[in-house]
Length: 114
Length: 113
Image (cartoon, rainbow over all chains, first blue to last red; front, side, top):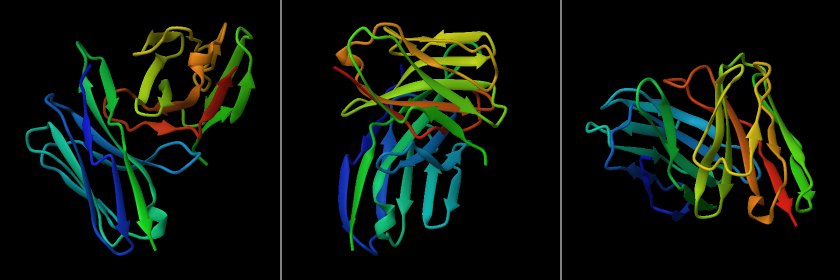
């Protein structure tokens, strides 16, 4: 299946700093999704991107669907302690015929020091 | 409230004792899927279902079974659990497989001794 490289693996930042993480692949995707997972909980959808070049915001979060359709980034501005968690990217691609598959990055662990 | 509900949240069992993890969604979603999450390996798909009575293998189906007799329910069955199935399991659903984002349950932490 398609592989996603998510970086960085982990980040330690001070409250108030901006954060950037990204996912890259050698393959093309139709949709990019960004999720956040809090400890002991399931992933929660943050932003969904459907078109190459699309830039979408959700509060302090901004994500972009790369022009080449092979990458996406997520930015968090003015981080706060509750931003702590694991952030996952996910890319959806056509896996033969009309069958779509979703593949996940391995996650970025974000720690915010108050 | 729209949600995906998994039960139980925590389960400790012994090798070979059959178990079922239930999953139910109240959003009338056609597509449902099971994932396992392991450190360093991320989320890997076990099985998925496009609709009632339509199921297919994901990337790591060995040792698991599923059924989709009703639209809202998608149980995961481990006929003879083994220690390498100790993991965090997530059920997820969406309207379709194409554009609709996946919504996840809160997870089931399974330990097989």
